[in-house]
Image 1 (tube, rainbow, N blue to C red):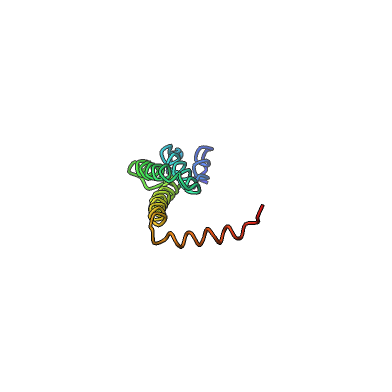
Image 2: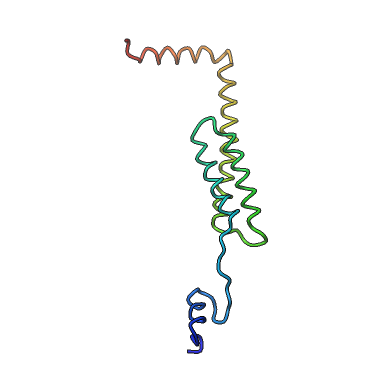
Length: 130
């Protein structure tokens, strides 16, 4: 019972370290948590059609905060989640922006006007008359 010579060593051994190894208590990383929150909000903002600029900005912020939270150590759980959500927010926000530009181009194209007119007529014929 040399490992459990007093209460302090018993507590250290229950924390998962080797006997005699002093582990500092885990500290929360505020930047990693902020990265996760920014990435999550940016990802959720993608559900609204015109919030993609905020999504792109929050995605970049989440990536920067995640990388800054490392401080020479490996990524923590919140930093990894913030990095992934930030990358997704950035990529999907830019994709949504490109899609809206393409859709605007289609709506202004005179060759597509006949197609849109037919679609509008079909829609109006399906609606009940008042």
